[in-house]
Length: 224
Image (cartoon, rainbow, N blue to C red; front, side, top):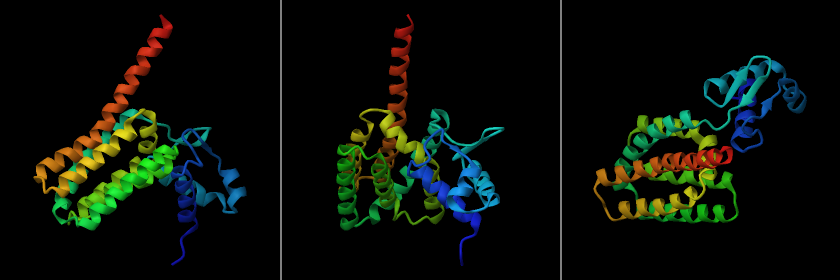
């Protein structure tokens, strides 16, 4: 069954936001989209309302739709929830992950390291999500998997920004990934794995807070 015009517009916009074509603060002008893609204005309006409901854009009176910028508050709330959901899913999944699964996880982590070396945040973000999805993939709870996936989708754009917003966090996350694999491979207690997976997510929150504190101190010093 062919996708509707609204679905087509939604996918174009969402992909553009995810890949950075429409970056934070970018104004999405319907007339311009109509000219560029040859699709009438109504499907664009409907897809923008859907993106607004999902938290990807803000629709501002007299200004139109604007891609959301980094929001530490809402990002942290979602990260806190994801930490708990993903920690539990990883603990449930751990006993069922095969040696091939763990080899693939290590391979993904190495690829993420190469993405860091070439300063490719988009690739890093995709590989990072694939890594976490793999560690949760055998949890055996379809509803839990849906919840985890939903929070990842919500975070995809702002999470990718966060790794580069907090210098050094991306590199530290790779070491934590290796530690998680070691715990799973060694047959660690599920509670230990859950705690480690949850702490991994929350460490990013801590890194963001620390970076913002340092920036505030620099700003305060400049105004003295």
